[in-house]
Length: 193
Image (cartoon, rainbow, N blue to C red):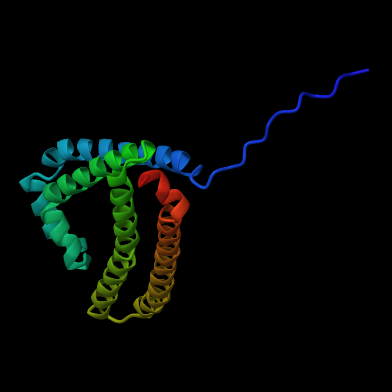
């Protein structure tokens, strides 16, 4: 006859048990982003030479790019430096979150809200790009193929912009839900004893 398994005490989960896995996963993503932006900082001077910029400006695609993207390309080094600093700040916030530091909760919350808002930039830029493509096609000779392409592009513009905006809304809601969860009284008590 076998013995019954020993009785193990059950631990009731705490409200803040989600913080460590979330902070560790975020730390890995932020560290990888920091590494990516550091490599990009080193590579940009090699890639964006005067000859490369001239070739880009003279290409047909340059006219299709939205003005904010052109501005971003013109100031790629500064944008990459800003993204690197933001990624390093995110790494620090995740590290502090693992140690239940007050400043880290505030910083992580700020980063969640910022990211939730920045997600809306992508559908806007995609819509501008597709709008510029439609405008460029309107100036070409109107053959049946071009007219079919313009009609297809109108549908694709609505689909792409709609799907990207929907994704931005979903991520916005998820980020705000996470902020609400981080600032519940029982979780907040771990950071503000």
